[in-house]
Image 1 (spheres, rainbow, N blue to C red):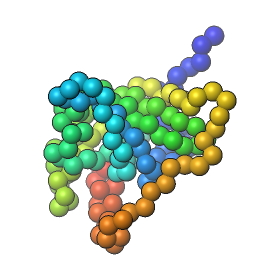
Image 2 (image 1 turned 135 degrees about the vertical axis):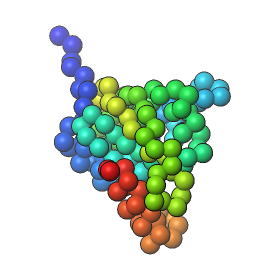
Image 3 (image 1 turned 135 degrees about the horizontal axis):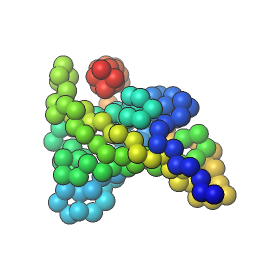
Image 4 (image 1 turned 90 degrees about the horizontal axis):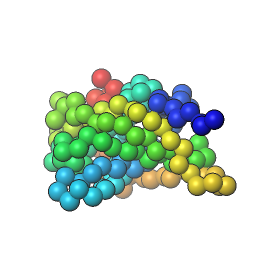
Length: 150
């Protein structure tokens, strides 16, 4: 009997994703047709079956999503590694009310795979810190996260 592959995030995964984690986003490069992976932090689980994120409007990631909607998000959390596969859709080319040109992208989740190698567990989640003007970074984060959930 094969293991059922979840098609939605668990509440524990949603809570983790909504706590400003580092997420790796893989797309297919629009020019070279090769895999491209980017670290992103403006990510929210909108529902158990949808994830929203923001990237710079003129970024390679935005161009890649326009050319090929298939994406994979990697989340290192809860003692393991998850590969979240789905189809992305640009909801807003430029998010209104934010000075920085950002696109709002939504992923419809198709599968959530546990992709940690056998016989091991993650003992520490990846961490990052803001290195720019902290007050401005926090203000921008709050604007972007608010826009992702609306």
